[in-house]
Image 1 (cartoon, helix red, strand yellow):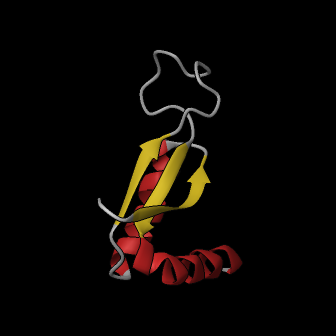
Image 2 (cartoon, rainbow, N blue to C red; image 1 turned 60 degrees about the vertical axis):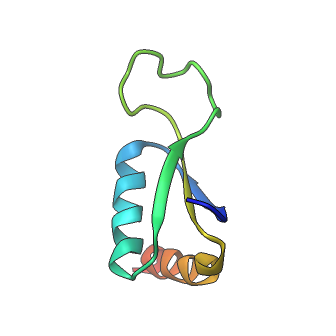
Image 3 (cartoon, rainbow, N blue to C red; image 1 turned 180 degrees about the vertical axis):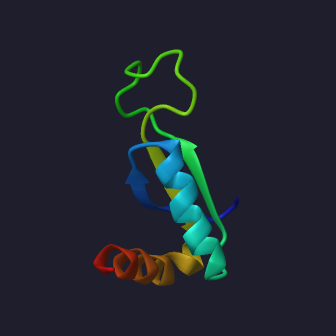
Length: 73
């Protein structure tokens, strides 16, 4: 994804997939990637550790709105 920016971080891959699924239903291209936060804390465990959610720069404001609305539900 070119021109991406960080939206938020979540604790694990499961939450990253759920948030990206929500964003995609709203037409926002989304991806997640591992971070180096807490490096080594989940060595050997698949999908472990924090994930950074990234979106296209032009979608950032709308993605924040969707994220905030999902937290208030």
